[in-house]
Length: 78
Image (cartoon, rainbow, N blue to C red; front, side, top):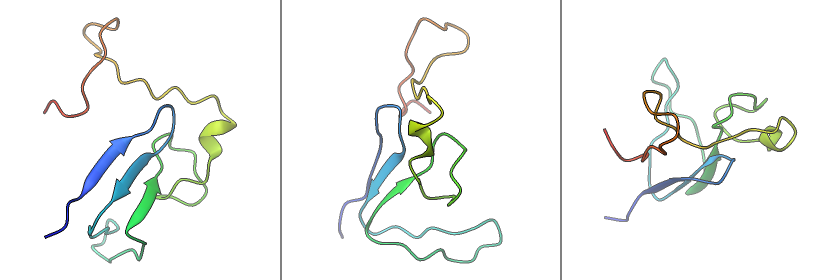
């Protein structure tokens, strides 16, 4: 089985690679390539995919701990 990798880019989208199934809220599969960029800023006109709007809105993608704002939060801490 091939590996799936999901990683946030600096102040940009989540970069996804590998065999994943992407579905909408109704469970319908959304077609995509094996490599895709998913919107993280919330302003894409092509959601769930990135359309580079983050570049025009000065998106800050830093993950911060709300209880301790000076600390960066790991995306992988559940």
